[in-house]
Image (cartoon, rainbow, N blue to C red):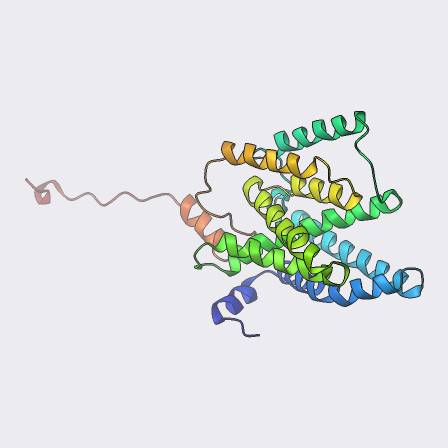
Length: 266
């Protein structure tokens, strides 16, 4: 696989935490295929324990890199999708109301309660890595490409789908995983928050889909109407030139030199 010189140069200009996150995206996508295959066939032996420890180590590494970038490199939590702006809070409130309704009506049932916490953490980390980090980073790497936000969402959804190949049939993989990834990516792109897609993802992993997708679509339609079209895709924190552009914008503008009275026109 060849990479264009422009993309290679942009990767080299990324800060080391962002290059590490890019490696983790590829590792989780490609390495997740054999890991998921082995997990399905070794559920109760030492191989399953090793795979769980490896997964938790990767999650801890992702969380550590993000925490380091926020604390030491002074990046904002919203750069990694931890934001309630642009309809995110209202959308989460709507999902909460629907969850309460389903619970009171007896329609909220868990099909996998024994592993709910692990499943919830996994869904949240997948949204953090494959949505908040991957989409923004791909937008930066595809600078100059038309409709780069669309291609970034498409690429992140394809990478997210790869680890599910051993555990899903083709009929489940395309509509349930790949199109679901496009949906999650679009929700993140519009809301700039991973909280809403992570909530829907956790609900899907828990086994109760009744009402969840309709709630997500309702929220998507709602805040898509509240938000004006994005003027420009937001730059990933490590976007080259971001600091220099800010410095140029903050520099005082010098006024043009005044001509002597005798040299002024008419």
